[in-house]
Length: 246
Image (cartoon, rainbow, N blue to C red):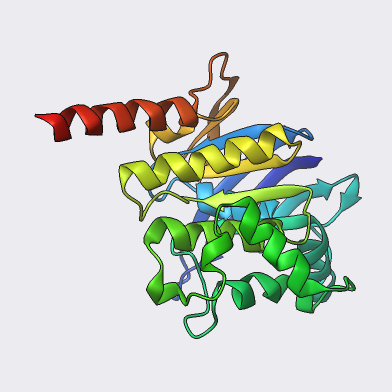
């Protein structure tokens, strides 16, 4: 699905000094994979996600999506690719504060040729467990619920691949498990998921872990035994019950 060959990204500071965010990165992501891209702050993982997700262009190298070269497309063509094939989830949710959950989810469909966008948006919200929250503003929702709205918005257009940048970074433990469980469910339904994180324990829920440091891939291996977020939720619930009973 995604093929990156020799991707380099260089930023020029005002002083003229060059910052090499990515250095000769090559990788492939196959349909149906659940991949975690893991690295410390400043490692280049978000820059890599932005390029793989067609939010940014590489300084050099080649990027193909479904066999189509996208690394040389103009901004308008890239926007069309993103709208048709890619869903995004971010750490800060990126919801419109004055729009309710339903209106936030409808946004990607406004620029599509799909009919009955309200019905499709309701279905997306129901699929993430927010049937009773569709008319709530972001300020009336918990952090976990806001991230569920963001996931519904990411999947409403039926994208082929979902990119999630630190999706649990602003959440408590229970909400983090719930969000990871949703990604695992989407992956089981056939969606390709690419999750960017700096947390090793979050990466362990993916089926493949790519490690990046100083703009280079330093590790790429299958995770033979991915953790199960539903089981983690069940264990957390049992611990809470024991604590409350004391």
